[in-house]
Length: 76
Image (cartoon, rainbow, N blue to C red; front, side, top):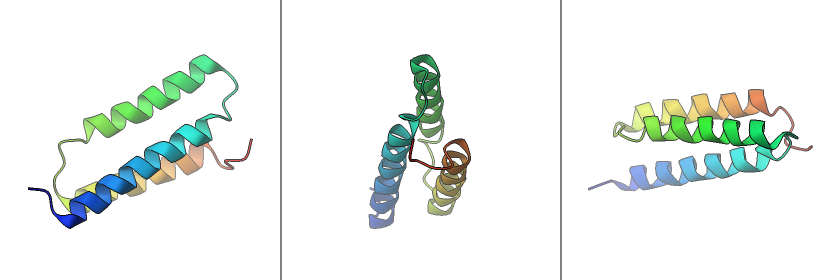
């Protein structure tokens, strides 16, 4: 049974994914936007099996950095 910490991390993953969706609106080409979101979702799915909270936090931090690099200013 997942702990409270797992629940909090799950919410952080969802928040990060929503942020990526919002930030991707700045990509003018619909095909590139779809590919970028598909790649991000695949990364989330690839790490779905993780249960160690430290490993999950490390993946979240890495994904946050990648989003900031891909979309430096979320304003279009």
